[in-house]
Image (cartoon, rainbow, N blue to C red; front, side, top):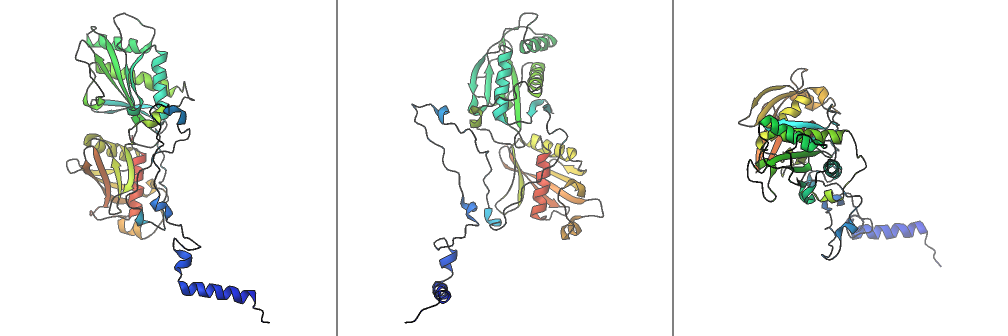
Length: 372
């Protein structure tokens, strides 16, 4: 009787398998499946469909996954996932403030819309202001028509509207506020817009009108209302408030660093051109990046980025290519229109040549983090 050694049997089995082809172990049908790049093909499943005769709030996700932009070209790094974006400090990151651009003004809040939305509603309720129309999926609130004919009121909203109208020299008619809460430029930030209407000064807006397309009939009433809402949120009166309904807000975060079809990093700004241009300029100022020249018509900023502005910088060939002396990197930032109210910011060196993609993405991330 012949007894085979176990090791020899195992060797024979493995040898036979190797003759059958290495794919027996490595492809998607073998024993040992390589799943290193499975994440590339991952997609989010469709939302649960609830019959119309049932209540949807019973199945709301208590821990919603934040929206993430779709990566257009994951094949550029199948074995090297993109690095997490660097985090840049900003002195006003945690401040509630009014942002201005020409005649436009809005409130910037360093919180997600899921917490800002209920705080705005609570502010109105505490001032005795009834909500006439509420469209959470669009972030819209329209107040009731308010009588401001008396000389004094106990609530702040009627008071500031009355005072603004007195300054304007007009006390006729009833007033209301149109309020919009939508995601801001950076993640976990929100923007609050207010428009004032008076039924004696003009016809009321009808339907879901874009607040950016109209102006307040008494501008001071808009600014004062924004100030009071901002002060209420900054005072952290209702910190535990959260709205699951506001997770359905169809607005998108207004900026995103991604890569285009060619794999080049771009900063996408979902803003009109005036604000997109101003946003980049303001971010450069906050980041203390010198702007040596600019061409607004062509949409180009000529900048010199100091080395100490970027995080995780290492000495290497890139420094020798881009650096001019010891003063930093000479770069050009190009603002290009992609679609209506959608612009891409891209980075080239001082000679309009492409820069290292990881470096370019870091520069664009810096701009986004300093934007508001």
